[in-house]
Image (cartoon, rainbow, N blue to C red; front, top):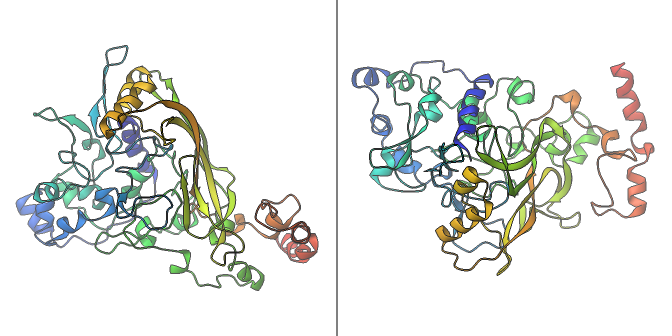
Length: 455
């Protein structure tokens, strides 16, 4: 959301696990002789790749969506055009721009699309040769990318663009994306470091990272099409989906009791017991910072500080102006119990039609005037009549990262004790079933044995 936040994230990710680029890139000699001139250099060995990349979610920031309620058929949705209260804006409303001067006369560049892998001289989702030339291949593929060179500047024609590191050194150090390459953008989504999903891909926080795995080991792309999960919040996709069973079997445990649970319990429920990040924001009231600029008032917890909420999820999403979250039930035959981080955001709704209104952040960032931001956004989107009224929206974020070590995974007593983490009545069990499911009779011997082994 705020360029300085992204710059801070660029520096912060230096501490994150990176992958090693073991062998020299086959195009190194060509680059040494001719230098690096962006995608056209890459096209010497990878013809057609730039054009194909323009059809991916990372470029379009949108896709067709078939698992979410109340969307227009045939239309693409994503960060380019969605409005919900984690961001309360999108690439259309908050394109890269120079914000008005604040009280101290200072200004800066801001935009929701600062993490788009282009230079912003063309719009998000643009196509054609001109768009191809703006792709920043190295921000994902170079282990020596100088992130200080990627920043917002004003071009000669007055347009605000993002510069890139197109140095020969960066180009000579290309390979599979490292965790660092991915987290430069994904860690800082939602307005600040670890705001949105609240997970940290460090060896201390995630068992996969501790074993040396990087993001693309699981999110293994083919033709720049990245597999993803069906997080209720994450709509845009490349049409390729992934689950834990891509690497693990349907019976991943040595214990038969645990294996029986996989029919109704998602792997994440036991193996991702904590998360973090922002859990509430107020876009109707912005906070003045020490630098004279404003930002949305935000409540945030640290990594591994938030206990999830558990719900049945059949991988389809309820989408209304005040709620975005999992659909499912115990009885539908399709659902499993999943963990979610619940986020609540306050923003303005249009009294005319009940829909959530977007906000252009330029004026609020400079002056704190939130209604001015709503008015400007409505003008950009062509909404002629608005009557802004404040309201809350609840959004469920899937807990799909930050897998805990084995000794910190949930066990029988965590769920089945009378004060356990699962609310069986809320999950659709009757009183008699809930009483049985929270009796020590079903887990005492197993837990006692584990307790003895750990003493």
